[in-house]
Length: 120
Image 1 (cartoon, helix red, strand yellow):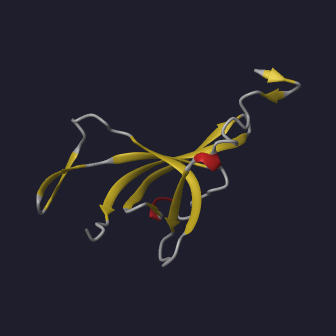
Image 2 (cartoon, rainbow, N blue to C red; image 1 turned 90 degrees about the vertical axis):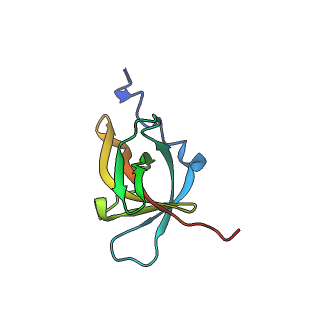
């Protein structure tokens, strides 16, 4: 839809970023990371999630979707690591989503690779 030559859907996500989750991204070889606001949600909520074999047996292969602001470019792509709380995720893909000619947001597929246990 156009209004005065402007696409109505442009900028729909601009107001949501302050309500996101505080995430940290660490790029390849970096000891520290940078913080940004985004949203992480599970991709495969079914019990039939693909499984991978490790030394302890079969574990679920947990995939997640990251919705990130257009300003977060992930220059190292799949070599970036996302940290949310105690969980660590590796990036499987990064995709730019457009609204008209402008990047609306970035969608990434993540795989959970670890979770740090706090002392109880």
